Length: 337
Image 1 (spheres, helix red, strand yellow):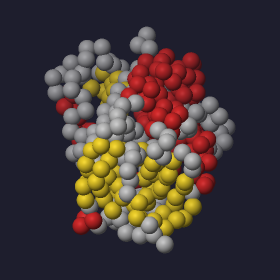
Image 2 (tube, one colour):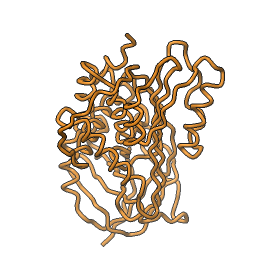
Image 3 (cartoon, rainbow, N blue to C red):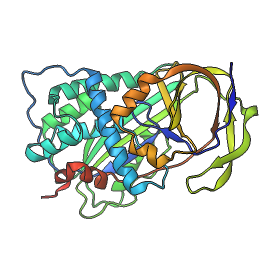
């Protein structure tokens, strides 16, 4: 039997893992462009193993960002960020390669295996189910005097479908060239990512992810009403609250929070919504949000009938990932020497 339950406290929506929402970022890693030789004797890396590494990295990255931006609505796509960094990982060597492998959770995976599994994952994501559109696009822009080796270019284009180009950063229209690529890759959602190219910029690693999904269980527009929503600082704000019909959802209830999986399309993609209990807090939830707990929570989800009420929301988020990646241990990749 379905019961109507109106959300009356702050909630957390996670756009982590493969259910990525539209976002983009830029970073300027090491200018090393030498392609480290791949192992000739390689053991194939299962796609599941690569996804596990991406998820571990994603939770570490999210936790690091939360440390400095706790009061903001944070939106990241670890799968697309991982793909972009794995592409540049092919050009790393020595201590830089070791640091990147550790941060990206790739230490136990062969380079060729990572590349081949990445290609398979990109292919799977590029052919989603009905009602879902998901695009991941990678590009690497180097200052004109930074050459790329042919093997690095081959791997980037073959495995990561990357757009790799050198560009004269001194030209006034250089930023416009990059911004056009970003706009085209996000279907116009992000029109101007780079405001100005600085004199000491040598490399831009830019990743764009576009996600558009239809709810599997749609909300009725006539059932959207203004309701109270409680903010982190204790204030209450009236927001449009969407309400769906009675349906069966994957659901979890603990002594700290409720969680529900809200599927898109045919159910391969989902948004997971977490609602901390009134006696708990978002800060407490963040403290236990890691891959180990995530896997446990996912294994405990059970089918349960119910009616979901969810605030309609829209927000933008932009972050330069340099500091977070340095804090995680990838600082050597940003060394300009």
